Length: 482
Ligand SMILES: [Zn+2]
Image (cartoon, rainbow, N blue to C red; front, top):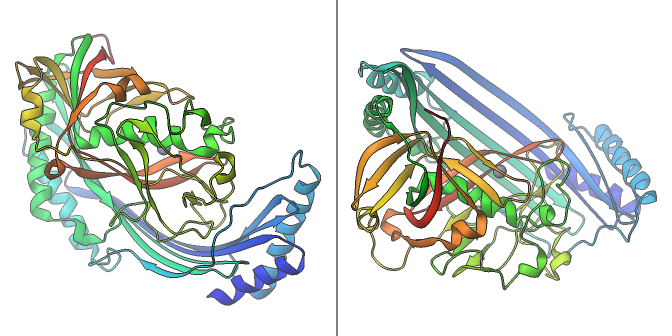
């Protein structure tokens, strides 16, 4: 599989390129959906092709094709060269400053004990429909739905520096949800089996059925939940809820391409300017956020990135202080770093790599602390579980997040459910209000499978992890009036 990719790089070298790389991808996807007692859809797709990127006189050229043949490889390199030559004429500065990287030979395989594409449709359907049937046993639940999603990406990568890399990564995701109707209202409650780079072995039917019963009961309970109070409260977030807040307020904010203005036209900028590195108090001393593209089962763990840089582990925030960005080889020089952090990823053979959020984890507390003990320390507050609607501004500074289920906390105990609750804050205010996070026994990983960035838009996946965490005096408001 490497031969034609090597030929592409050889042609680019003869044309005078300082650097070139070529990728071939083979992508399989399956999505199975259920609605009440039946399957409502099953989509399978297979897709393969290659892309060639050339760096010529400081400017990029990129072209791609689904037709992986010798003649087509020559045509694609010629087109990439044509684009690079045209771009080189329009450069206003010296052009791309490309960080060095040693040649690498690597074969990475994600752990997949049961290949989801080899599991029968009957077994997958049974998992979803059985969960739906349990949810529908609750009389308030008028609709039960779910899906399973599997993705396998095989990738071959070659560059002019002599790297020859292969990865084979299988990812899985599943969500079930119940919609309850009554009390002049309707409410949805879901359970996400944490998405990860694992196979069908990630799923257990007994767990699905237990969770189905729980979400059905909580969907019903949400119907009679009282409308959230407004004001300043202590809030406790569960792992899943906080994983989205980590993603939006830290992950995107610390992408160096965004900081440098490369994403302004579409995804936005960042308040985490370069002068803040090593000094800025991003959060309280309890907050250590670790980037880890070597995390087992992590959705961004794929051995190496699409610049040919191996996965790495580093602190983005340590004991509250901002330490380092996520970078690719094109961006490291902006902060005088010699080497890329290996975050440059493309979502398809026809996409160019851009800086993507790594697996990003809030490290658990060092002292033994359970969720009950955390809540016991709250006189009047709110407990947020799961994800709901959110918004954040283009500087990644002002935000609001809801929860899929929210409880009031009174005198150190979870009291009744609330609806329409949102927490609203500024990124540094919020993270500096972090008082405690539970210990490693209560830490969980969750995944984001649909992170959109770039223009044209690319979709990436990454893991975020956290333990239940307490934030003091956060503004709570209502997502609706009554
Ligand atoms: Zn995102």
